Length: 414
Image 1 (cartoon, rainbow, N blue to C red):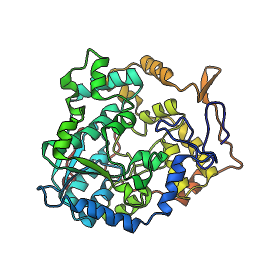
Image 2: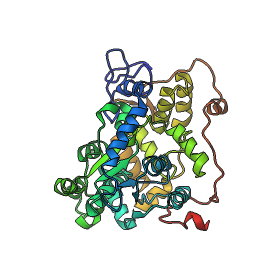
Image 3: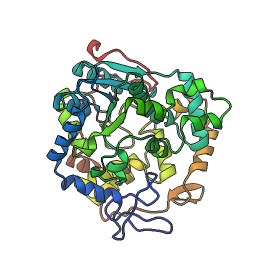
């Protein structure tokens, strides 16, 4: 990928210097994400896992619950719990923030996970009217319809930790380390308020939203406030990431867990990855489209880069997949606009306001990215995807008109 004014591209992957997680590109033209990924093939992971065991053993049998584990109906929740219960021998309390935009497959997976692992479970479900008010503000002010999910899913586990005096929270992967090399695995970074605000929440905490709008109240935002430093220190809450102690490979992990626990995967519209974030209607739909406008790349680029770094895809194959998926439409826009009472006109106006002009150009009333991924030959989509095939399971869910589902029957009753 050739560089152009104001923007540099990594010579190994497709990330550029305007990446929102502050990627860096060294004098050799290689990004920090690719550099830190090299650690996965160099570190002694057996030694690192033993260090993890020593860390968590300090928390065993101090409370009824040894730790808190945030879970979802997608991502690596089955793998995380398998490690926590079966390898580390911990007794976790499971917590889940109800993302509201649930797919039925995601709800089924949560039910299956709770049933198979037999753990106590607490879920936070916020009133839909509050979600709508928050979405209207976050979309208008900084172009996000996903802020409430990021804020709720990162605040709720810490709220429960301080309330029930459970000092250890175990998270899965640290995105900043795994994707852009923000830290080394050896830094063993923990979950912090600062990282949450600057990166997960795009710089806006609940307190900031309250200042932005007269329509939002303290009551609307209570579920999104991060506990005070005083309360965190009183309990001694820490949040560790398994990816600092385990060679993190989400594809490999999912496929091991799919054989063991037989949960569901879902084909998605804008990426080949049928494992991650399949619990949310919008994450790889309209939320992903908005990401493309803001950042000049979307989840397909994230997934391609990950697979390239593990040498399961070549650069040319990756470029073909990005071209194929990046321009695909999404079927969830009407659902989002109708629920949040946002007009098409307003949606398009906000999208143009947040469009990154350093990455996009306008020709004959159409926008296109300034850079082009050139291919030297034609590729066949099926042949490429077979090469590193993602498991496609048979869904237990009948196809129906997409809609929001806050709850579903438990897995055991299906």
